[in-house]
Image (cartoon, rainbow, N blue to C red; front, side, top):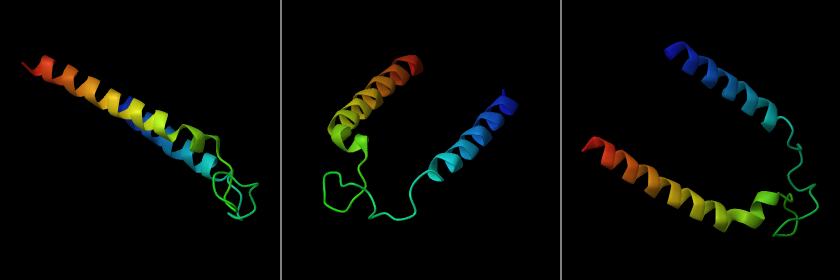
Length: 70
């Protein structure tokens, strides 16, 4: 199990390097998102939904962990 976890972490680190490599070198060269001159990213439109989902998931897993511990 430990070996599998190390392989997964290594894969995620390498994958994130390739994803970051795809961003443009000029941050002001974008078409504009919510503010002028900034790069347009589709995640900008869903920040509130993502934050709400994250809070709900934290509460769910915290409650699940609490019931398993008893």
